[in-house]
Amino acid sequence: MAVLCLHTMLLASPAQAAAEPLVLGSNGAPLTLTPSLDVWLDPDGRTSVESLEAGADTLPFAPAQADKKYDLDGGALWLRFEAVVQDPRTAWKMELPMSGIDKVTLHYRDSLGRWVVQQAGDTLPSSAWEQPGRYPVFALNHEIGQTTTYYLRVDHARVPFSTMPVVLGDAQLATACQLESLLLGAYFGLATLATLLAALIAFSYRDMGFATYALYMGTFSAAQAVFTGVAGLYWWPQLPELNNVAIVVLRVTAAASALLFVRTIATPKRFSRALDWLILALIWLLPAIALLDAAHPSPESFVLINSLIGASILVLLLVVGVSLVEGDRHARWIVLGFLPIILAALFPLLRNFGLMTSGFLTQHALLIGSAIEAPILFYGLLRRVTQRGEPTARASALRTTDPLTGLGSARLLLGKLRQASSTAERYQLPCALLLVNLSNLSRLQQQYGRETGDRAMVLAGARIRAAAQTTDTVARVGDSHFALLLEGPMSSDSVNDVATKILASGLRPSMELPEADPLLFHIAIGYMASPKKLSPAQAQACLDRMMHTSREMNDGSGKAIRMVHL
Image (cartoon, helix red, strand yellow):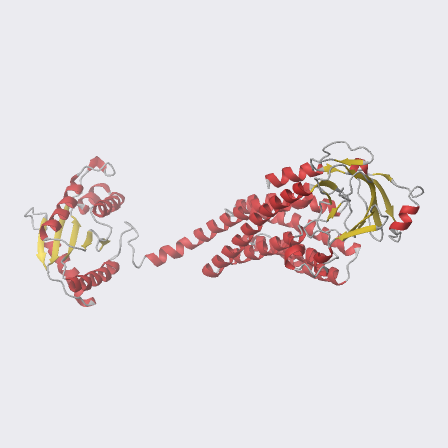
């Protein structure tokens, strides 16, 4: 977008002062025609080019002004200039860098006195354009050394016209078009990706926020495709009647979907029913007025549509502002996302009301604002969905996860034990189940309180997990008991080594506990040298036996590890 900005500003700025007639050399650099142009507003649009040529000295042509706006409803604007080509190596073109112009016609006489006529505009199919593209582009007379007078007629309704043509070489025009196509492709690719991902997330999570975001991004990017001329060039090149209808309907639909999106996220009904009803009224009124305008276009309906869009921007700002004041933690992302697009929307609105001339900002500000807005809103929505889904995910995880230590539950362990016994039986491999009891938990709780006891359990779970492999299963199976299921090739000695490692890790002083108390473990090892497939009842019986063995170890014998053959 920055490169596109630089290129467009280059085209819009006077590269050098042109003499009369305009001399076209060999470099092909962009030249603004404004200093060489004379303009005349034909009030009824009925003057032919022949009459214009015949009465050129009597008609009130005036020098063109770059900042002047022309209201062409019912009339036509004639632009006249002279130019001479001096170098045959450069093919010169004239570009009118504004999409959406109703009709533009270029007239000039060749060396034989015949009229050469070229046309472009939204009211014509692409096949009728001299050079199909997003903007009207015309070829200038290629005859060397001949001073040619050009007459450019512009027919454009409702939106004040203020774009001045630019002359540049064919090679420079092709380079600029390729660059613009690349940047526009990047934007529409981003918009399409955001829309599809939002729709997928909305379907997966049943989330209306992402659903309305997908609707908003889809309608807005479609409106930009029409506004920039991409739709007329690629979507319906032979149906020019869709251009003017689509630009109004899609712009208004995008505004309505933006209001729907903000209403879904901010829920203004919480703090004002009147504001909520106002948003609903605008959401329904905007498309209705757009359809009425599509059926019977008029200057009055166009002004009404732009006024409603301006009102929608104010209401949108009001809703997100109130949400921000009310402490909605998601409102800041809505504000941050919509701020660039709201600022960008002011430029085409000011142009439509005749308060600003056409230029880079009126043509491309919405594209730049949308490119900034899309990822910010997407990220904000993703945070919202994640935070709203955390309680549900935690509640679902309680079936298989211990809420204190984050380890697996006894239910998870029994399922893993049945699966491990079945796998071990198939491949004739041993497996082992370790029951680890934190034997000094009661003393820690009595001496320091329940909070210290919970901290000791979390620390014990972390140290047992550190001794396990990625294929092993660690679970909490009682108030002070943990289980470690070992799978894979092993011997009784290797299992005993794991138990010894766990025992030693508990004896290390812990700064997380008062006075750096150690964790005292008693470990019962259930070793299955020839495992067999276990039923649910057998798996539970196996775990119960290991629990019983672990309790028996508190007999004062001082033995911390005991092996049982299962």
